[in-house]
Length: 455
Image (cartoon, rainbow, N blue to C red; front, top):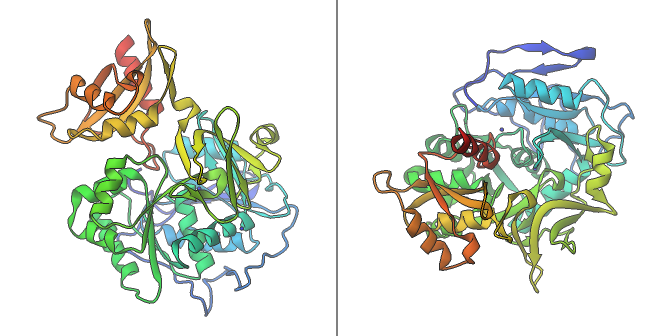
């Protein structure tokens, strides 16, 4: 100014034209490589100077693909590469170590053997994202955009601080934890997520952040992680409440979940953003400094400002379509109130049309999740001969022995919303399917229910 089982054994797989993808050494103990404000950086890595100037890049700047583990070795593997990328070194393409098919598909689409596109603000990160299409896209994020985002975040939260990484560093939310640490000149700490998100591992990692009293302490979670910690209570919840700010984003959080967190004195800050905006760019409904938000005539949210990406890797047509006249037009529907606060209804592809009425599924998710008998909820739209589409609620009950009924869920929704929002079907599961980053896999859930319906 943004993601699973044990990592493979150490190895290096040769790609084309001399490019390599490295695999990390799995570690159980929390270990980080220190990069101080003063002193020598890790071998072979240049740190940003205090004025945060970038070296002038070559027009044939290489793109390095790096396999990113979920264990605590993530910092040793990727943090020096992030430092180098922000300081004019090779651009970084972070990739999951497995499943191999996903990794190989991203390599084929991103083509790391081809030098990164040239821009005035040199590309530091190429972050894969699938968006609503499911097809991989590589978002080109400049060093200046990343630093602008990090600086604006610290300004909003009350100053630079030390960050705990509890999200996969293959996605923008996790990567921005590392970028903010570089800009702040602080040492990040990573929670071990080799076996998934574990409240005990989060609490153990938090100790290394919270024992520092000379700087502010921050972390970031997706709503599911917040829910897990609230349910676990104990040391994990005590640790979470001790942070100066906890960013919650990646998907809409149910109001009931946020109320529970705030009642537990967790300093929640809700965020909205995406990979194309260097992660969260709207905090608690208000744009960060230097970010402009508006809506199109059709209600689509659009964003402008120094945090924007350059476009998409090797896809100039898609770049032109999404980035126009300094604005990035999102696939989200939203509204700005008279005070400039943004309310996001959901994605265009997350809107069902039932009986001729548009039904934003994320809004129904939040309504159903507020039912007293529901721990988690997601909704999908399935074809219906009478309604065109019918809304189906998929829930994880608080008490598996006494799940909610369709009638009680419908009555709960109807007390707060139009008739079309009330689900016409209820499915009870032990757990919701999730993507590697923690979001509910609505597309996969829809496909699963369609197979059940037609099978």
